[in-house]
Amino acid sequence: LVGINATRLFSVLYHKTLTVGRVQTLTLKMLVDRDAKILHFQKEKYYTVGIQSGSLKADSGHIADAETANSLKEKCTGANAVCTSIRREKKTEQPPKLYDLTTLQREANRLFGFTAKQTLDYAQQLYEKKLLTYPRTDSQYLTEDMGQTVQHLVSDLLGLLPFAQGLALTAEVGRVLNSKKVSDHHAILPTAEFVKQGFTGLAESECKLMNLVCSKLLCAVAAPHEYETVTAVFSCAGNEFAAKGKTVFVPGWKEIDQRFRSTLKADTEEEVLNALPKLAEGQSFFVTADVSEHFTSPPKAYTEDTLLSAMERAGAENMPEDKVNCSAGAREGGLGQAERKGLGTPATRAAILEKLVQMGFVQRKGKQLVPTKDGINLAVVLPESLTSPVLTAEWENRLTEIAKGNADADEFMAEIEAQVRQLVKTYSCISADKQNLFQSERVIIGKCPRCSENVYEGKKNFYCGNRSCQFVMWKNDRFFEQRKKAFTPKIAAALLKNGKAKVKGLYSEKTGKTYDATVLLADTGGKYVNYRVERKE
Image 1 (tube, helix red, strand yellow):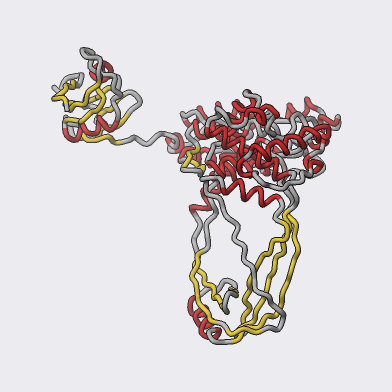
Image 2 (image 1 turned 180 degrees about the horizontal axis):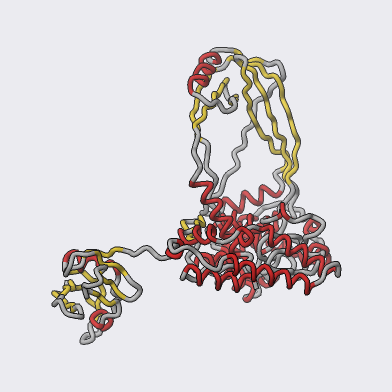
């Protein structure tokens, strides 16, 4: 009710198809808000002073001005630095969970630049080839009766995967088994059929995805990563400097992850281990010092990876823990089973992102997703009730109460209808200047050969901006259609500028072959513009 009526209402008001939806509108607003933060960000310069003695390096905190930093550097150069404290912390990083669709989409985007839709498509193809389990899942666990199957799967994969050769792995399968956390479908796994067939006959994109799923399974059942962090604080010239180091005790699952990532051509961040020399409190060092200049960084534009993550978490702060346990836009897995998961579902998020791109509200720039002018305008003109997760959170709470029998469904629907009526009443008209908000900017192609006014590109033609001038070049002109050549803006621009354009790949009906030629603009001033071939190249 809200989506259909709001879409019709705002489309009619602004004379453009403006789709409004409970999930896609909130997603668009997240992109627009991030874009505004990046746009209004003002970078600030700061300095740090570093002290060094042999292999030991330590840094000061942020210093606002160069004068203070240089003064500290002068004081520290040739001075003694004393170790005032050493803090050692033993830490354990547990193995990652198995993939549900969203985490698979996020990682495939980060490592390979796949869009969420591409990942879903590739996973679906692998599922249909019986090489991958059902991909549209929101669970990262397996049911408890799958222990034996996984055990066999892991030992078979160790022999099959090039990066796992010679790996000593004692699979702790119990960690990935939890029937309570599986709703309709368990986590994504390679199948026994894949073990038999291997990578034979798979496209490169499918191989990449299979490798990703296999490596995740091996990581998930491997030992935890155990290490120690050391933070040493030094005092020099009345200022504090800190040095941080890390020592690995048990590589665990990170060894598998590192082996897998080293096979990728993708940009992956290598972890740099900084081992500090042996230190003791009260120890002093003769040091040299230097100053380095830095700038604060703006927020990063969303990628599909970070946006999918944000969609999963969206609105969590507005949803009471004890009340909401289902996702906005879908109620999969029954009440009390599915964990709460923000906007959309794993199966729908990719389609929502694709729709925003397709409708022209969002564009891809490399891996980044950036709102277009129309996308920004749409997020601005819609009321806050349609762009804020609060309304979604309230609805989810009410639906949960209805399912428990604590609230009345008819009463809830009556309120929704009242909200829609109020929305239409409030936004029944807009000012004249706002009506042009979504009108596309006209693209100038060149100057009119008849009256010298601008010639613009329309949907079906290139036309003169002067209404009393009759000059128009039709995109479906028979001259180009006969020669099986699209009449592009590039060709039109050359014809207007020079009266001729070099065109490649013109089709000859006589010979059945293509040829390159110069096309002349033969304008006689009449209703139709003519063209002719000057010569073959």
